[in-house]
Length: 385
Image (cartoon, rainbow, N blue to C red; front, side, top):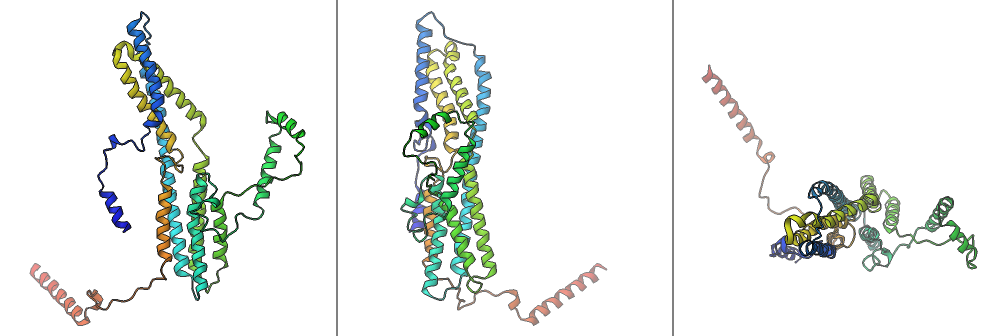
């Protein structure tokens, strides 16, 4: 049924790309473009109805336009590289999840119903890793999400000692910033007159890195299995899959927490706006009233390219053009549930053999074929002589 729906979606007649509005960046830059267009209207009216001619040399477009083109190209390419790398890492994570779930479900011995329940619980944690990663990358506490809670309901909500370590780290970081923080005097004044403040009070922090916590539980689960339950090669494959998931999580964090430098983004925005604002002053002496639509279209194009780069810079968000992590998780959930919904498969031999290999040919026929080939070679040699 799902396959039929997918085929129908592929055959569905869609609007041409040029007429689509959903997913377009135009709504986000429309107000900015209209504001600059209003400025161009004022410039044109002033140029046509008054003696004041607000125009600047046309050569400014050539110089500044070249710089804007270079900046926008770098911005878009960098943002798309982050987008594509995020998609590639998600695919790598899916490979690790599939391999780990397959080894747990097939290679682990099951002697009782309890063993099956235990394997199913472990695979739920494997699937929960994908859902927890999705919420973690979006800055959401996964422990309160309805799609993740049933999968991780059998584990604790946090690791022991995690909050104390985070509190100690933050406490040390505050101490190291005492001399450099310009607002330290104000903070010290507020704390001194706060009667409810205790110097030895340690603030409790919640651990929101649920994916990392699930990796700890899964590693402990695989390590606890005896050799009679899970053989050594399968254990090694499971540990390799867990290492791959850890690497993917770390790479996700690298993309999420290493944005494009603010100085570059700010300078690009300033340059694009300067170019768009000065554009009507450069075109009014040549295009007259055509300056207004030309400026509007130019602003849509330039501000739109900048907006696309800003939108796909973080591919894990909820924007229209971000990665569809929700659909990825739905597909993975269906696959895992399909696997665990059936017992370990067994391949049964077919009743009728329709094909035979060359090894099934009787030996005398092969020998006769070889002798016939040798005799033909001798006849060829005699004919050549």
